[in-house]
Amino acid sequence: MMQEKVTAERLTPEKAAALGRDYPVLRGKRIMIVDDVEVNRVIVREAFAPTGALIEEAVDGREALNLFALAPTSFDLILMDISMPEMDGYAATRAIRALRSPRAGTVPIVALTAHTFPEDVAESFAAGMNHHLSKPVDFVQLLKTAAQYIAGQ
Image 1 (cartoon, rainbow, N blue to C red):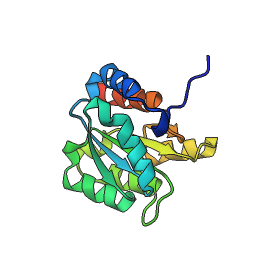
Image 2 (tube, rainbow, N blue to C red):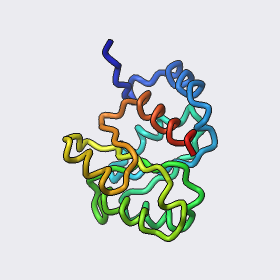
Image 3 (tube, rainbow, N blue to C red):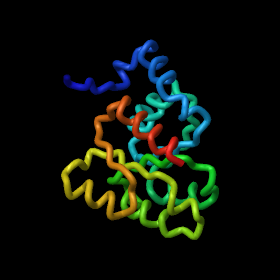
Image 4 (cartoon, rainbow, N blue to C red):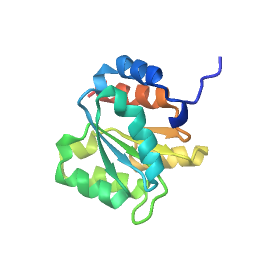
């Protein structure tokens, strides 16, 4: 059975409500979306809206690093794009992992990127990411992955 890719245009109120009910572990959790493309951040924010998760946005890796460094214990998950100006997702992940905060080594960081070749996935893991998801965003897989990592904390 083929799994349907859900896009912002096909996320009906009924589907959104169902997604929110399916992932109660996300309610109130703080998730950082790091992506330089605003429409990508909007789409991911839409995916999490029915779950009650609290979303923080960063437009590049440098901003993500600064946000995390200011409040390392307040983030439950980071969704990291790879190709961004100023500081890419690999460099941002390595910099977050190198911070002295104990949370820097344990916060789940998930690549959310169009870079899907095996070497891209390997580089994500080598940089310290926990998981690799591809764009276009499959909302169900995204929420399932987020719930898995947040519940495991």
